[in-house]
Image (tube, rainbow, N blue to C red; front, side):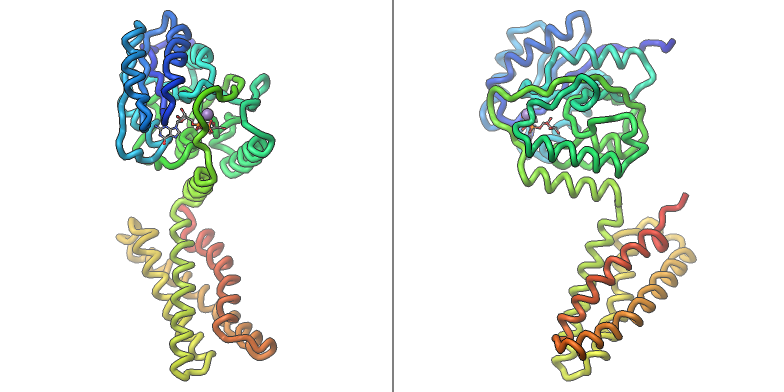
Length: 362
Ligand code: GDD
Ligand code: MN
């Protein structure tokens, strides 16, 4: 038996132009909460007067209903949810979409499961037995959702172990169990952000994702791109900054080669000078922007430099002869040949730096 500390729940509703859905949503939440203390908190980025509609509906019901209106739309849907978590009156928060695709009646089930104890998060899942994703507009979106869910679970096998639907926007979270500071809101997948950043205990209940009846979905290709950036940042953390520096270094490398060959230097010499310059330049940029907090430990830094310098020179020792071979046998320009070899080398460097030079300490 666990002691039940439950005092009530804040129902957080992120909204972007959902005016016609406000009244039915609030009424259904009110009946779902019957007998449970709670409030509804809209975090709104609309320009269709959703906030005025919230004020109007608030005066019709007994449940406390308030709205925070934001002008900057910072962090989009995820940013709105974080503001909701910060400003909620209760520690137990239920996040639900404002378009009725998430059945408010299930809020009671989420809270009931939480009160059984031993969990930090309760997820309303479309993919657990009895749940369904029928409301995902078309076959393509359904397929994309299932594929990305499988991919994401494979990337975070432990953290997402107990969650079949980390992309859902319908869940309960105990605010006292999560650290809001490291969350990087972007796009739609705030639950994934919460679950992937720390090990939490999750339980699930099934629900049927309904079809939208009013307003329109804000999902887009741009949201898809944000999702990929989020995955990269969550999984590789600082290593995605490393990739950006590596790409920048390759461009600088080619620019140096171009300038030196145009000044009349033989391309092999140009390649060697470009390689050494960027090997050292990249290392300094990595230390400055990727691993700044490690800089205090001088000996470690020297050892990182040793590994990085040795690997990159060994790589250049292979790469530059290959470059020469490409130029002599295919008669392509030395810049094009260098670009090809650098692209291949990039992959090897990334792997070596992620696994050896900047391997996370255990
Ligand atoms: N405050 C705020 N700011 N709310 C937003 C924003 C924004 O920039 N963009 C969308 N919302 C609100 C919508 O008004 C709605 O209440 C909710 O967030 C979900 O947006 P939809 O546009 O209806 O998204 P969806 O139905 O395509 O996606 C839903 O299902 C996905 C799973 O398939 C959401 O629940 C996603 O979180 C979920 O991943
Ligand atoms: Mn929706």
